[in-house]
Length: 266
Image (cartoon, rainbow, N blue to C red; front, side, top):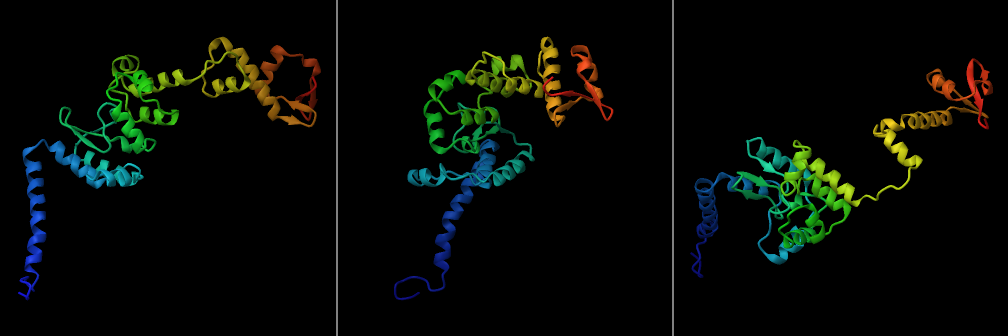
């Protein structure tokens, strides 16, 4: 020992360093053995995904809520834990916290709101402060968010449980699909007249009603002609000949190099 009474060989230093680690080891052993394994697995997932929350309020606000999530690390951690048969559920708008949380009742790990890359720390606080929510309509009135944030939450299944009763009756396999369609219907303006742009979208999605098949053929024929211009002429292919012959005058046609053509002004 030196004059100050401290051991010069460093043994004392290693003892005081080992003591707190021993406490941590005992605590983790107790947690793993005496509590539902879902708690231990949740801790492992939080640490491995680097989404551990800080206990200090100031540090938590500065370093965690606004810290960007490493989604590659998050995906790897989730893949590792689900490969062991542990269920990680989707976001629950009434239960999910900032990070992963254990759901002992359902024996699963609840996905954290910070896992949604469109939802920031202040928005998470806003969601938690407004709880509880009885449905997506009530959520929208109590915690209004922009379209991007709402669509992202729906994709993460945040409203699946609170709107499951009615959504599952429409589409049991995927309530999020129904909730998304419902949300879009709420925020979309009702179209009062048809435009070529709207009609083109219906054709592209293959949802034109049978009552408008003739209009669809005319629309597609018109688009085809504009793509097949040659100087002052439109050229008509054999595929569209029947449609033209049924509706238009053959006498205005001219055969140019074996191809039926019609002047644009006609």
